[in-house]
Image (cartoon, rainbow, N blue to C red; front, side, top):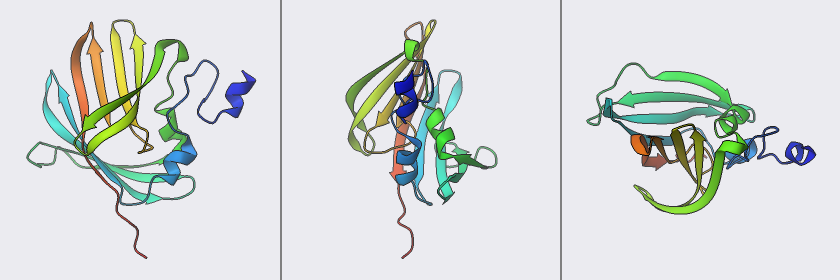
Length: 166
């Protein structure tokens, strides 16, 4: 267990290593970074989910999350919240006994990306997350499978990093 405490990728006993540390996520994120993902679910109309970093500092970030129809019509008001880099890392901390991690290269809307594929099993449900190794932060693709059937997919549509003003 002592090794877990020294590895910044492992957030506690019994947890699988996360793809990125809080510091890696922080260092890869600036105000203006925006990630657009398409969400498809068997029980709802598809929509776009846009996450934009409004402010970033050493401790964390202020994010805005918006949901839009595929033609760009807002689905409610944007949500604005603050979070720490460690909290963002915690989103990818899964039980080690239920998680497999494998490298995989996938095709995305922004090109082919080398990823770490995390498959997290919970009974008849598998949650699968692809984290692009060159883009520290949230997964660029996700699938939720129940009894082997894909019930939800989340796929990267756009990834934009705005350079800060000089």
